[in-house]
Image 1 (cartoon, helix red, strand yellow):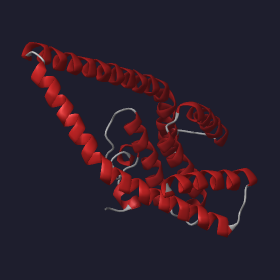
Image 2 (cartoon, one colour):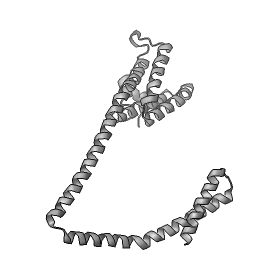
Image 3 (cartoon, one colour):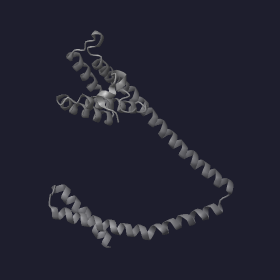
Image 4 (cartoon, one colour):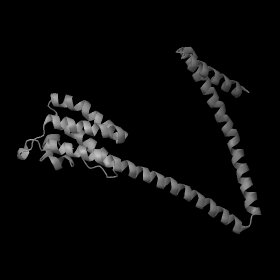
Length: 217
């Protein structure tokens, strides 16, 4: 009876606070107290009734299995296992198709990012020129595709890089900027089903003696 009264009181008080957008500390404290009381009585209910429920289930199963023919019982178990396996196969197939579809959509913008990094790293080498206008154009193209297809982790890594790159450049911390770029590339590899590599391994493809720039672990 106390549990029912507390549960109804909790519902009414929570509805009142939410509807009126009430910021009263006293009401919120009272609501928390009611929730604790509800939880206490709910746990007591489970402790008292779960053993009885489990015992009832076991007794029922024992009665059923003792009255069923062994062949019928095996057929039922086989049918249940087959049904569960079918559900799992459908779920797994749907999940794999979704992963493959997203990977195909993400491959283009992720490749554009790698190409962007390569162009920046080759700037000034072998008369390679990469103007600021071209760089902004490539970044805008990458951003537009990333908004649609980038995974949450890649978007987060990219935003972290953008926020910190200006500060790192002003403080002459180019090594930190490069590490953030590599973090983005590693996160992209994860999205495409490829394992990430250790610090500096990807950057060493673009930059010689990268260990001297970013330091060793």
